[in-house]
Amino acid sequence: MRTSINIAVVVAISIVHYSIMGYLGYDPAPEYESLMAWSFALMVALWCLDDAKKYNFHRPYEFGAFIFFLWPIVLPAYLIHTRGWRGSLVFLAFLFIALLPYICGWISYYASPAYSEYGV
Image (cartoon, rainbow, N blue to C red; front, side, top):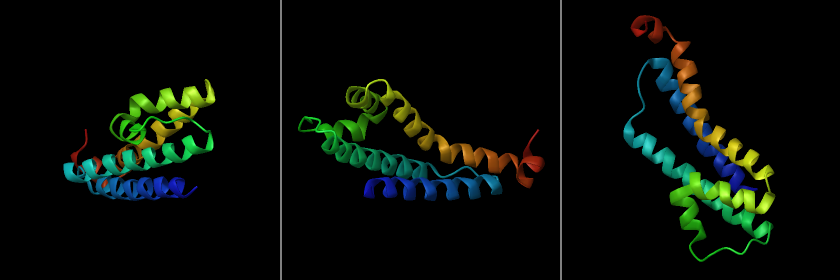
């Protein structure tokens, strides 16, 4: 439960930042994008470790590192293994949550006066 709150905080901070930057017509700094990507990967890895305990999944020694560095590849395999095909829906939810800050940034950019000034 605590890792779900951590994921929500990381995503909320990202949404606010991307929305403000999009509204002002700026691109987020590459350093910030890297920080948020690594933070999200860390939160997903921590959630996955907690979830593996709940499902009594026998984890390899470096399971957390696999999730952290390769979460788009390893997470669907883990979720399908523990939940069956319903795990693919959980993975799609994670994918949507990962893309949500970008989507909010695009929406705020196209709704801003900066788009009408610099847009087509």
